[in-house]
View 1: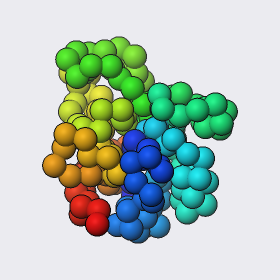
View 2: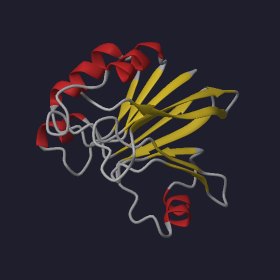
View 3: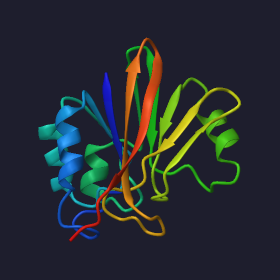
View 4: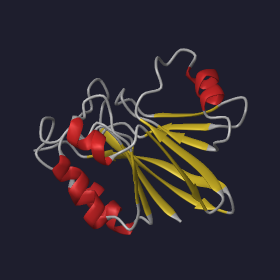
Length: 167
């Protein structure tokens, strides 16, 4: 099962559209995960239409319309892997124990908010992934998203993709 992970798209404030390489990845993915801060409903509509399966949450910049359509936290089982998605996890310092305590029955937690890619594993075995942002790199050198594979209750082939600069 192929996953595509993204967060913090902030359309149309940070970019006018999702980057073409990301959209090509959406077409290839079995599951698309969005960890919040959409800003506009059009992006949600687009990903719902183009994704085989979309697992998504709202973020702190998402208004009432998106909050009506999306949960604050999403849970899914993918080929035996227990996945959770949330926008904010708090400060980087202490993130691992805080998330391990909040999500004890989870194998992988996808989060966003900081626009900073993150890939760590807690002492309890919880994998924490932040795909960064495909449209707003902030203090990062590149806009990014992630892909991964799920098989036999395991997450493998986690890859951070750097997007070319917008012209």
